Image 1 (cartoon, rainbow, N blue to C red):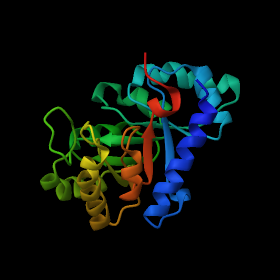
Image 2: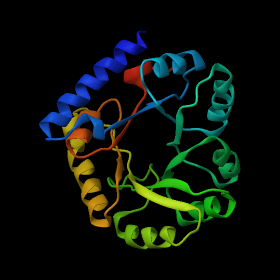
Image 3: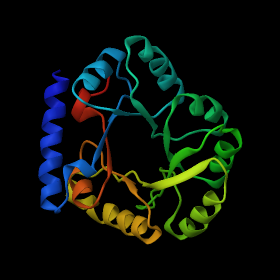
Length: 220
């Protein structure tokens, strides 16, 4: 597995997708998703220029993140998976930004336990899938208002997980809807797009793409 080559190819594909949308590739942050990825692979990604990493699970992230400073690596860590309220205290010690605020109660828990201002994104269930978390579109205005009033939280944008489909083009309406929602609130970031659909996400305005398999290979 040549991680550096994979990253180079990803950057090229992002640049082409950005060009098609009249955007600069500098607007798009690559978040390398390290679920089931070991520290040596993370180090290779850092050496290839990756500065942002994402984890789905607090316990697995804690093990890796606490080991990395010994190697002189201090990347930015993003919590991108479902965060249980009983894991908030640990998450606040290791993550720099949380993408997956999917309820007011979770936001309140983070605000109450945080000792600094935490950048967060609100997760939106754009596709209305029962198996996925996130605010429904009809709940978003109230959610933004509620979370904005909480101390120690700073809403930076919106996040969604698109449905798994055979043809990436099928999820374009999902990404477009999230962009329109983001624009309506005047927010900065859109966290959307994964290994199978990130080019569509970039064309539709993603500022953060969450890429695991395409960088590190198939998960064990």
